[in-house]
Amino acid sequence: MEGVLDHTLRDLLTRAPGIDLCVTEFIRVTDQLLPRSVFRRLAPELEQGSRTASGIPVLVQLLGNDPVAMGENAQRAAEMGAPGIDLNFGCPAKTVNKSRGGAILLKDPEEVYEITQGVRRGLTDSVPLSAKMRLGYQDKLLAIENAQAMEAAGAMRLTVHARTKVEGYRPPAHWEWIARIREAVSIPVVANGEIWTVEDLHRCREISGCEDVMIGRGMIANPFLAQAVREPDRDLSAEATWLRTLLLIQEYHHQVTSRLEARHVNGRTKQWLKMMQRHYPQADSVFQQIRTERDPADMALKLEQLLAVEMDR
Image (cartoon, rainbow, N blue to C red):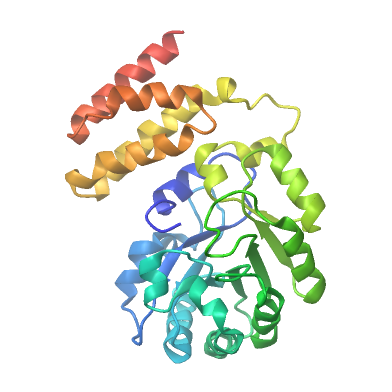
């Protein structure tokens, strides 16, 4: 999730138990070997054993269409300590697809094979290679062929977002197609798409047949979703976790302030609050009270005041 689920959110979201593995935002590869500074910027966990502060492993995700360059950059990431490489064949962004990256590659399973094989050749056998795909670009006709191409080229695990590029993020997610793909390949398959609640996750598992599930937007909306799956008897409702969530927002704003230009800071904090509104009714009230703030210091003060009110309740 480019520009959203960065290393700061990976740090905060993995503080609650339940997450087994994280993946970076995609690192865009053209036809060159990227400097190590690019990897450190987008995957600073490489400097701390390729794990978040809570100890959760972080894979490095690459996006591109040049098999040789993709392989060279995968090798560099592995040399820097990445515990595995993930390939992005799912990004639906127009700017990415226009430069032949992400989901548009699913139009050509042979090209998907060549890219995956190029990366596999650039890695030693000890470095796991995984890939993420959508069901296709405009339709689902090549879904199974693409999945089989990734497996044949050396991918060891496959995550499937159960929609096409054209379907975007509109419900429903077609989990039954994940089941078809899982039956057509021999490597582990991870289900992804439209998982917002514990009930969604259980239905996804039942329909897809997958034990492992990747959650993106659902975790951003509810930072305690994975924990709720692991601890079903614990009260992790929106009401019960709102104070902890507000503390996370405050910490997020503090961390973003320390690393971004001032003009970008408040937008990131507001963005997370907006995405939380799906799960937390309280997030809308907070958003309305901070929406006009422009200065990061003023925003920090406002969050501190709102937190104090919440703690007095």
